[in-house]
Length: 442
Image (cartoon, rainbow, N blue to C red):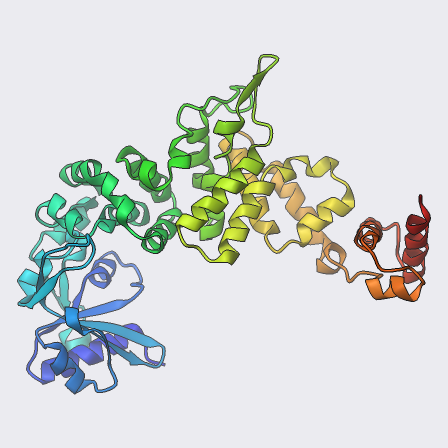
């Protein structure tokens, strides 16, 4: 099966054979120099889109107006873009027009120096690096720096401000001061970016390896991006917590610590951790000299659904995030929980993420992972059949036994299933007998 790298080198070879310059470009060059596996490969070339299409008749001309053609072979996919400079960004995202040019000018219109380098793959070896923007020096210094005037780069595409802190998170680099100042000044403009585009960048930031994930969130907060994109989280600054239960500080500090403590989270889990306590600001009360947050899970669930709506997540993602936020306190009481209730939680497909959120929440409060470890040993020892066995009774069984269908059916079946989970009903006969007793109660 052809890989993206093999397809990119084959495309470059064919373009060169036809008399065109063809270079690996952008993020794949950065990743190669960092000894990271590139997520995808892009080619920049002197060939026009028509010339590329002539060499690759099956190519997809999805961005030909901007000089971009996509070559696909099996599962491999490579974007081929003509060297260009851009003019006018009326919508703060796309250029109003492009002018085909050379490699140097193409590099100067890109976002960050570490993404502005080219690699000539001629011969299939490491190739020659073409660096017109100082990208190699910034890679060595572990710095994210906008190419040219940072304000101009961010005015061209406002999402680049969030991309900057995402690269801080993914690469664990620092933001160059002038670039950081430009983000701070222009941060309100991030509000004009679509929820879908914000979600893609936020997902990569929140799932970045540690310690970069925390550094990226800190940067997003310090530069004013978090206040625009997730004001619910920014509002947690200064919301006090009891120092005995939460020695780490206010709710905002605790929230970032919880995200930091997650191990290889999915986007849903990381977003739930970021939002798990957003209800605390509204729920805060002082009772008998104690700070309380009763009901903050319910308030947080509503806020999480609103955030997922703004980010245009799928309904599945929204449900998962809302479930995790609403249930995040439940496992604190696992030791005192009825067997049936605990098994119902364990049977949920989101249980392992819920448990990981609980673990991170405990660690972010100065606790230990020991309760989590005990619970997960119990969970893994049970096996799926014990956690989620097939019900001994169904509604058809109740009807066959002479019970009239009605609203009470669900309560009867739930009670019988609880008894099954707790070992109080181990056969169909025992389950039917229990159902009859419940149905006969006044």
